[in-house]
Figure (spheres, rainbow, N blue to C red):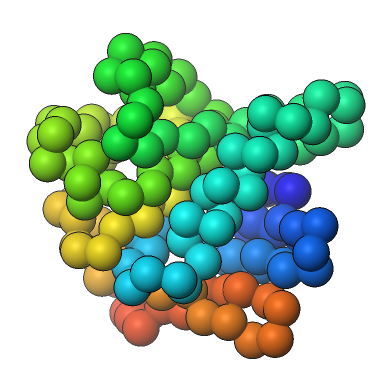
Length: 154
């Protein structure tokens, strides 16, 4: 698993051969989509790596990625948002935003982190439509397609 903070490129190959190749947008990428499109699969795969892979190489590759979902403790969320140089992946964000409505504003204000937000609804994160995408599957590769790439929209 690799996330390049400078280029926004994310790559992960699972043990069963599925590869995530994701060019993320600067600061915030929102991935919308129905069930069974790979959003939670990616989240759970990273969760498993972080919990079970204790060798130095795996820990080093996962050290700058953090996970948040509706079960994450509110204090941990605040600590993560206050940090920097992390890719924070949020699963089921639409549900989480209902419980913690200030979270969307906190993400928009977070200067030092990047966010990959999984949601079925559009989230008001202060980003342009360029930052909204959907996963697509081609063989065993999951990528992200962006319907908008309008110059001038940051």
